Amino acid sequence: MAFEHVSVLLEACIDALEIRENGDYVDCTLGGGGHSEAILEKLPEGRLAGIDQDRDALAAATSRLKRFGDHFYPVHSNFVHIKNVIEDLGWPGVDGILIDLGVSSYQLDEAERGFSYMNEGLLDMRMDQTQSLTAEEVINTYSEKSLYEVIRDYGEEKWASRIAKFIVEARRQAPIKKTSELVSIIKAAIPSKARQDGPHPAKRTFQAIRIEVNDELGIIEKTIRDGVETLKPGGRMAILTFHSLEDRIVKQTFKDLSTACICPPEFPVCVCNRKAIVKTITRKPILPSEEELEYNPRARSAKLRIAEKL
Image (tube, rainbow, N blue to C red; front, side, top):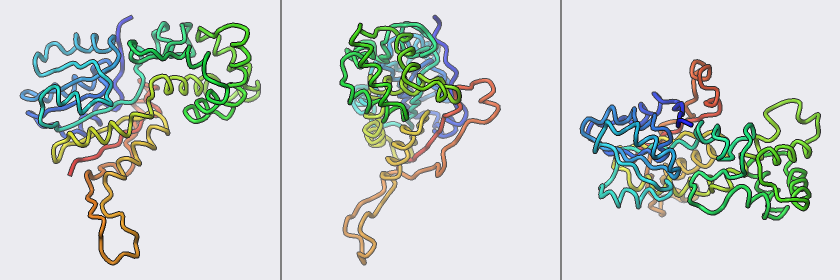
């Protein structure tokens, strides 16, 4: 299957970075290379490093971007290692960082990757196919309590308790190995009336398991803080999120990094000597237009937040 992915909020992301022609940039989530291509087209003298933990994505994007020659540096890694990546490249700092936290259309649509509740496949869900933990292991080895907490916290699923119970009961009969098996269990756990409205009944649980397998939420704050350290003064970080849990972490981390004095209000003078590291550019997130949603419905939940290094 060809690696195809429609880049979300493409123009807004490029505008957010305020690209300098000779600057150094990092696309932390290379994916299909759409955002990177748009950045590189504005870098006649600059460089861009594209990071991705998915080898399929890395290979496809590298092929797409080969026309940019030594202006483009593909890196197989997780973006949580951004500081090490930049150090290994020998760059003194960067002028901009883009992070797209969405799952690519390719990953969702490629049945064998096991991300989608709409396609038959093995329960995998690994973005980095070299890691050991899979969705199958989560589903078949986590305790009922742990499954409940994952589905509740990462999926914000009101039926998390019943779903976890039904999973544990089903795996006592035989290991759960396929996406279709998990979907059937989820449908059985959720009362029929509750399944009549809203999204697909398995959507939230699949999201939760995917987040757990890839530690998606656990690495966001560290990546932001480490990434900001690598930014040059005036450099910008732009982050695309696709659900409330991600957006909350980005918003709170940007807020903390942009806060100066944290002394109690009754103190007459500041004694903490804390300095703001960034200024938040977006008080409210940038959202996709109705026009974009018409040709790319998967952008519906996207939010873009921007911060600038002081």
